[in-house]
Amino acid sequence: MFKVIKPGLLTTIQDLGRKGYQKYGVAVSGVADSYAHRIANVLVQNPEDAATLEITLLGPELKALKSTTIAITGANLNPHINNKPVPMWSTITVKKGDRIHFKGYSSGCRAYLAVSGGFEGDNVLGSKSTDLISQIGGKEGRSLERGDYIYTGNDGTLLKIPTRRRLIPTLIPTYSSNVTVRVILGPQEDAFTEKGIHTFLNSEYTVSLDSDRMASRLHGPKIEHVKSADIPSEGMFIGAIQVPKNGLPILLQVGRQSIGGYTKIAGVISVDLPKIAQLKPKDKITFKQVTLEEAQELLVKQEKLFTMWKATI
Amino acid sequence: MEFKVAGDQAVLIILGDKRSEQVTSNVQKLASLIESSSIDGIEEVILGYQSILVNYNPIKITYQTIKATVASLEHKLTTSHLSTNTLIEIPVLYGGEMGPDLSDVAQFHQITEEEVIHLHTSPIYTVHFLGFSPGFPFLGGLPKQLTTPRLDSPRKKIKAGSVGIANNQTGIYPTDSPGGWRLIGNTPIPLFNFNKKAPFLLSPGDKVKFKAITKKEYVEIVADVKGRDVDV
Image (cartoon, rainbow over all chains, first blue to last red; front, side):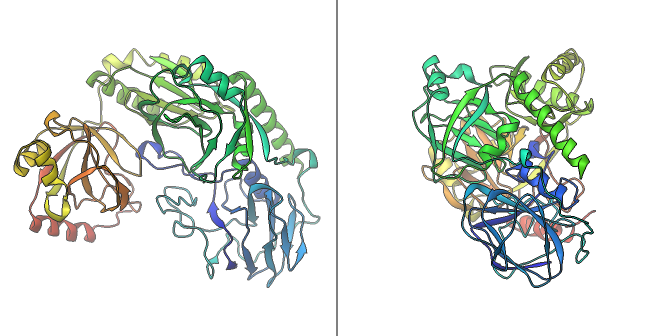
């Protein structure tokens, strides 16, 4: 159990998302960077879908009301306990009364804090994820506030780990503020001119300030449509890059609506989704085309490494 | 039927290039065929006006397998019937505070408010899909005489249950939210309740008919709904 002393910029309870209800108009929501979230959970011996705290840029200050084990992964927001820096991608023992806090950000945008037993939260349609738009899940459907108490699944049970568990360094991602993201063209690549596709694949875009968990809006050279930028509303998917009439791409993230009516030029491949989850305003992004087969091979390879690591701990 | 790659975890299936009764019905039939086949690796489907988006787990199933499996279901479209032809009657208190744009809509079409209500309650609508926010139904079948553009500037807050018109569509706001549809009435029936086993009143493919009610009936239904909050 923790008390929120300071909430930070945007700290929410998230798990792997609210799946199976998109056809009823419910957003998936969930962690933006599922890779970092899953690793944090594995480190503290939780199921991969246990709820963690998603912490954005400026971290919160939390007071531990019971001793427990935590792990912090994802963006480097300079985590500290009682003013001493603590390692990331590793288990950390927290004692009753300890203050967990963060000192500014060094790389990435979103950090994940997992606790032994997982965080409790409002379970709506099978998920504890906070959906800020529909105001459901997590802590009353909102981000954490000063004075909140947040509960954990197995309160007070100190995880018995003989030695510190950590992620092997080769699996720790690096978050750059200048990324190349691999994409598969489609489903509406035909709605763009050859020049438009060329612009998209050969320009540098900047993440706008107007970006959130729903989408990252990008500034840069305008992408030319053949004719219309509108399509009959259809299902949307994670990493979809939609281009409305103004020609500026919008990267759809976990908080996206389930349905949309703008042309989509491409989709970001699964293994690169953490890269877009970790983008912050003013970061630069370029796109590189790959095939579906390449994308899926990369994912299979990543999952193999993840499973192998998981088996070793 | 056309298959399109949508990232590496989804397939878009396009069932027609124009909105028609036939396409709408095929979208609904195919979506339910895919769901009832419980294909390992297929996670969920999202219905659109003319398409179905199939979300899948690429570790478990490939794009090619989904394409082949779904294509093999195509022949069933002509023989299968929609099982979800449920007709749901939705009571609406039209006009006044509950439908602040009713008089504008009437004026726009140079008809009386009563005629708007009559036209709106006449057809049997089809739920194309739900989207925008949880439980928001996009209904097809609005009489042409009621086609009305959106408001020039959207309202900041619309009361849950508001029934609105935007161009050739009609729909219901399930929760308090901003929006630009022209509001002609309000239903006291909640569109979803997360405490219930079946949380959503409407599913894609359902048929809907609106029924005009009086203020007294509205108040009675509100009280009745409060009494039956949980059925789990």
